[in-house]
Amino acid sequence: MKIKEIIHEIENFAPLKFQESYDNSGVQVGDTTREVVGVLLCVDVTEAVLEEAIEKNCNLIISHHPLIFSGIKKIIPDNSIGKIIFKAIENHITIYSSHTNMDKAPKGVSYQTAVKLGVVVEKPLVPEMEDEHFGLGIIGELPEEMKMVDFLEKTKKILNLGNIRHTEIPKDKTVKKIALCGGSAFEFYKEAIAAGADLYLTADIKYHQYFEPANRIILADIGHYESEQFVKEIFYDIVSGLNSKNNAKFALLFSECPSNPVNYL
Image (cartoon, rainbow, N blue to C red; front, side):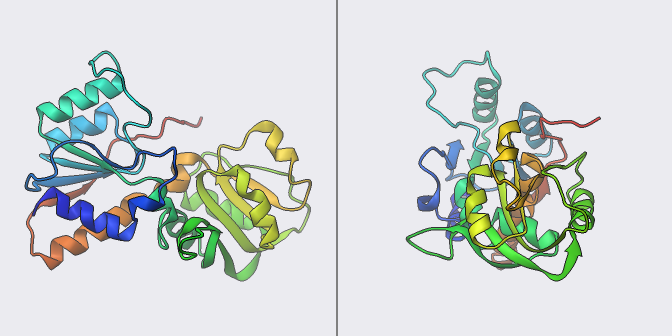
């Protein structure tokens, strides 16, 4: 099977046309006409992840975050991105990223995280005008109302969080309707309020932003990496389905390298 066949399948699930204008989803480096030997799945492409791909004989790395976000004027091995590009080319490894287009897919990043938390997803938080089934974030409900603190403790455990930063939670506050958007998406809290959500889960909330909702909704920061970690399972399902359908014989592996740059004491 050719690398481009796997890419085609991913883009059927999450079309590139839905990526944000600032984004750089797609092929980052490499030759997509090569035969697939092994596939390594990750959230971020780091030097350690690339070394892992080499050691495990994987010639395709599929990541969520693009290796290259902005224009590069020169490629030299004096920084991490340059080193990764050089080494990937030297070892005939293709790197492909599916970022905001995967965020917007109907069963994409936020959907996957919500399901892990037991949320029954209703619709996107911020739907695309071209197709309302695509969009950033989700709105959904829990099967049964819960105490807010209990749900956040459950979230902390499932996402393996060191902590959850949140706005003040009134005594005996409960949660039923939830808005969630993986990654940095504080700006959509007004959409969450308009949808009637009791709680908005996202990441990278800044200090002064916690004041803005003014008790209209509970804000909770669940970590950027943690809110997107299950994207690897989406990749796995897509590629393994193609693997089985075509009776292909290549390794399909989750990266074992920690790539979350944030650590907790």
